[in-house]
Image (cartoon, rainbow, N blue to C red):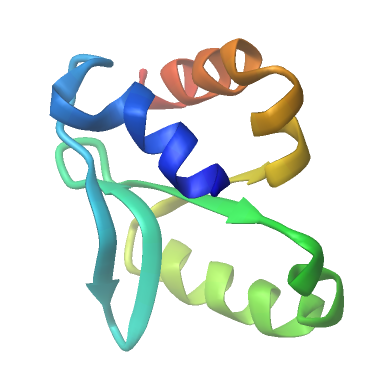
Length: 93
């Protein structure tokens, strides 16, 4: 659900850059990916509390591939989408 909400705000280059949804790179599937800026946006829900080490390893691998990972909480998307969008905009520059 939160993925669909965020997608409404970033699809069709609404932030000035194209994002892909469910983008595959190196065996990982990114929630959203901006190829022009090499920025991945990952939505963290409850399941991520049990996969902390996996997420750290994955983020290190992506950083090594020159991809910046921006993590946002699903609760933040529901409570304050404008702050989430602003955070994404800042990380695209």
